Amino acid sequence: MPDADALQTMPCFQLKGANVPLTALELRYFEVEAFEETLRDKIRQAPGFFRDIPLVVDLSRYKGPSSELDFFQLIGICRRHSMHVVAVRGGDEDQQRLARNASLALLPASSRPESPAGPDQETASQDTPSPEPTAEAARPVEQEQTVPAESRLITQPVRSGQQIYAPDGDLIILAPVQAGAEVLAAGNIHVYGPLRGRALAGVHGRHTARVFCQSLEAELVSIAGHYKISEDLQEKGWKAPAQIQLKENVLAVSPLA
Amino acid sequence: MAKIITVTSGKGGVGKTTTSASISTGLARRGHKTVVIDFDVGLRNLDLIMNCERRVVYDFVNVIQGEATLNQALIRDKRVNSLYILPASQTREKEALTFEGVEKVLNELSETFDYIVCDSPAGIEHGALMALYFADAAVVTTNPEVSSVRDSDRILGILQSKSRRAEKGLDPVEEYLLLTRYNPDRVERGEMLSVEDVSDILAIPLLGVIPESQIVLNASNQGLPVILEDESDAGQAYDDAVARLEGEEREFRFLKADKKGFLARVFGG
Image (cartoon, rainbow over the protein chains, first blue to last red):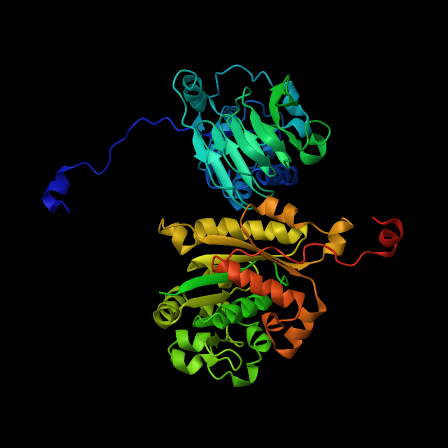
């Protein structure tokens, strides 16, 4: 430990610029029960993924009256589900005053263009289970096109209850993914064995991500938030080598010949 | 240095205690000094199946808490000389099995025994985690039905991530599948998963297939490990499993329905 005098001359801390990816919660209206139900639904689709993440409430699409915007309740609900609201983005003066009263930080409104998948995301079944990247996160994602992303290689079976996540790139699994297991990747997911659990590719919103497996027996497959459950996967390529990709915002299964 | 074998499953009622009793008896019968420990604190059954419930004075928790020595608590089996039983406490909580306490007892047993067989409680809570943490090998007891297979898969995942061998980066725990309550008739009728189905899903080596049998129930009620019923198919199947555990090659038996039904006889099916 440095001696006390040396410590005294050193400043207590240093401020640094940081680029941290955040999850934005695009609020359309606020109604306690509907909000909590939707949140619970999202978390159920990817348990563990949302645990202890910081959250920004984006008000750019907020249509409800400002008087209904009870940030204390909103923060409380998120906290109950282990998510932490840290700031709001956008919103008018009234809304920002309410946010400040709830000790939230204020971020300027997003300048990025509207998401192309916008209209499609209105339908509940196609809704995104994975957080959309904010403007801050979008930049590093673009860079991934030139810099090879870190992929993750798994050689052991992924057992029921286990969760494997490749946060930056592809996930390659040389063993079965069992029922009750969950594999997530920012990029593609390759399973050289039966896929019996859940596979979520392109979790940061990459629409070009694909899922490949030697036998499609999945509980759920999702690409960039568009998903199909086991029931809807039975018709095509079931229990056969298959790839799943996103075609015009719908998951398409095709055989791997 | 003893080899620690944990008999586990996740799901309850699949035959862990029956298997622990037979495997430990089988190993002892083959000349190894063996101890079988009941980790199911609060729901002890092993002493009933081993027929020593009237001789329990001290138990596993007493030893952990320093109220008795190991020698006071160990019960010597009356049928097989080199077999000892360490019973569970019926009155304590599972939390009484402290990490340090279990480790100390296992280390002490390791000095004099060849095999330590741990009979795990059901579930994936503290008691089950304590029973599997120190394992060198795991016998995953599974019934041929989907929920049991799913729970076994879960336990295999925990073995790979939460066992001592996993945490210390040693060679992984040896994993073996033991299929119990197997009924070839029902498999043929498509009412039960087959051996191939289960080993295909779990993807671990098959140690044995124990046929469903009234003998197993009778033996349990009489306090007799099934493996000692030498004439029965279940007893022989356990004997094969123990032999395989020691690396012997034995052909799998009792996988086919031996009696043909009426229609099959008439139509020569």
